[in-house]
Length: 202
Image 1 (cartoon, rainbow, N blue to C red):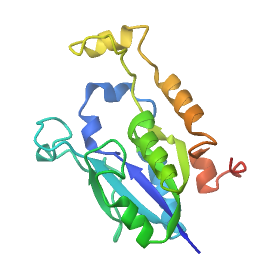
Image 2 (cartoon, helix red, strand yellow; image 1 turned 135 degrees about the horizontal axis):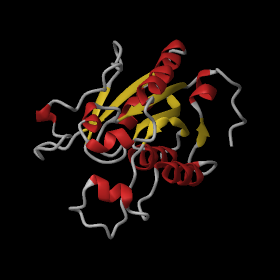
Image 3 (spheres, helix red, strand yellow; image 1 turned 180 degrees about the vertical axis):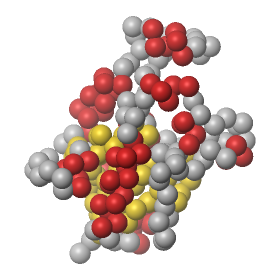
Image 4 (cartoon, helix red, strand yellow; image 1 turned 135 degrees about the vertical axis):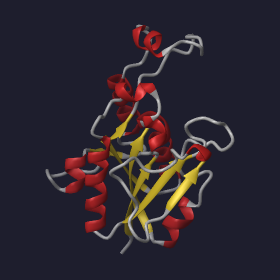
């Protein structure tokens, strides 16, 4: 029988260093991810932790600054691999596929930060590789996206005030719409952990 895996993507201290953290879509991201991790461990599923790094940049994702580590309240358990990626998706610049293959994994559940970027792209690539993907929508977090025509020098207040800025709610809605039934089954933490019955897989 094949195993399942939970992949926790970019739930790291780097994001907490940014002022926009306070405007994130899911203030309880740590609690929600922790519930998924506990449930996965209870089922003896493989738990893989993925962190994003941008070495040599001097920014919050530069490992030299010490923020490329899980947010307080989350920690890999014994034997749970931690991978460091330098691309948006968790497959391209890591050995994630090899780890899943060696463990006999066919079903992959994903959660993490950012909903529409690193978590979504990992879901799409995983689906292309033949995994049955589950996207746990309320165990992801994202932030308002400025319009492409807004100058890069725009401050946070200007981004938030711009009516063209894409809201957290719209980002989540669009991501779920794009993934559901095509690349993944979209579930909630309650469904994945068994707190409520799961809907039929689409």
